[in-house]
Length: 234
Image (cartoon, rainbow, N blue to C red; front, side):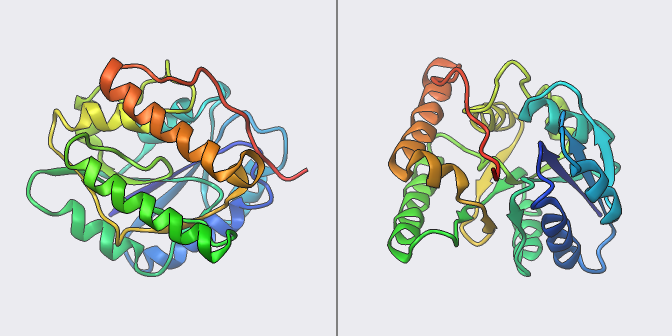
């Protein structure tokens, strides 16, 4: 039994595809899909409802507000947080469940494959995650938009930090969860996701910003970046 929480802000172009991929990946396992309509001004909620997801409004815009709203309503102890511009491959659930069922593990995360990028950039992305997995052994991390955790562990950790706007929120969650139990990073638990942020801001700039915020949270307990830009189809 698993709850899927999908935060969504103006994702009418991609939300149905995301939901269908979750339904295929979940198969016959009892599950629910909660789409948190995070102050959208388009048809995101309507399309999600038509695709058989539960739709929950969260008027306060922000990824941590949306994730917390979904977690609060999740029926099951295992909660997967998937971004609305992502697609779950067939083997994702097997990898995720295998990882979180290991002794002491309270959360597990995996990499993102940006299949819109060139082969060379995807190879760089894979190398980045190999380095991230090594760093994770010292300072645990979660990949925002692709992680599974235990609801009780999240509650004990204090939930999501709504004071953080965007960058570093996943690392902040990992820091607090790692005080509760093991946080695991599994290279086999990968998903597809949109490369729109890297395409508009540049791969080096985007990757560098994530790295700096990851380090800043661990070293200073706060993110380095104060804000972010949303990237949606024009």
